[in-house]
Image (tube, rainbow, N blue to C red):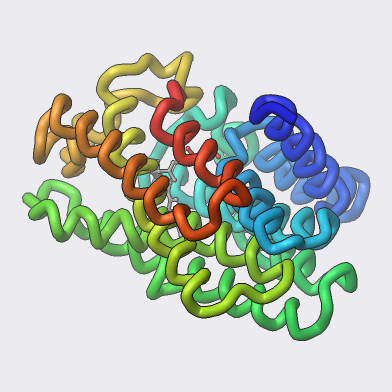
Length: 293
Ligand code: GRG
C-alpha cells in the first residue's frame, strides 16, 4: 500500500470513528450536539489520529482499538481549538476554513462544546473494544497530556507570553507543552493499544515524537508568515499581529526552514531501531515537515 492509500484508508476510519463516538445531532440538547459535530467532523488534517494509527501498526494494535484512541485524541484537540479561538483567548473567527464555533453559534455554546468534547474523549477511551488495563493506561496518557503539565499548561504560558520576549528555550518549552505533548500522547497511545512496547522502544518513540512535535510547531510558524488564510483555513499572519514570539521572529525564516529539516532527520534517526516496521511514522514526519497548511 502506498502512503497516500494508507492515509486515505486511516482518514476514512477516523471519520467513521468520530461519527460513532459523537452523539447524533438529534440527541438532546440538539444545539450542543450539532455544534460539537460542526467543530469535529469533516475538517482538519487529523495529524494526531494518523500518528496514533501509525504507532499502533508498529505494535500490532487492533484497528478498532486505534479508532477509539484516535477519536479521543481528535476530540481533545478540537476542544482545545474551540476554546483557543474564543474571545477570551486568541479571538479568531476562522478555523478549518469555517467560522469558529463561538461565531457560528455563541460563546456559551463554544465553551460547552469544548467541555463536552473533553468528556466525550474519555467516553471513547473507555469503550469496551479496549481491555480494562489498556483503558486505564490510555486514559492516564491522555489526561496527563491535556492537563496543566501538558496542553493547558502550555496554553497558560502562551497567554502570559504575549508582548514579552521569550528566549528560544522558553519558546521551546511552551510549544512542547502546548502541542508537543499531545502529539507524543498520540504516538504513545497508539503503541500502548497494541502489545506493550518495552521501555527502550518507548524511549525511541518519545524521541521521535519530540522531534516531530517541534517540527510541527516550527512549520506552523513558517506557514503563518508564508501562506494565505484561504490555504491555511485559519487567519494567517496572526502571531506577528498579536505580538507572539515565534521561531521565525526569533531565529528568522531561513534558519527555521533548516531547523524543520534537521528535526525531520532527528525523527527518522529515532526510528532506526524499528527498521521497516516504522515506515508509516517516518512518512508522517515527512508529511508534518512538508505540509502546506
Ligand atoms: C485552550 C486548553 C487550550 C489549549 C489550546 C492547541 C492549542 C492549545 C491551541 C491552538 C492554537 C494554535 C494555532 C496552536 C499552534 C499549533 C496547532 C495546534 C495548530 C492547530 O493544529 P493542526 O494544525 O489543526 O493539527 P487541524 O485543524 O489540522 O487539526
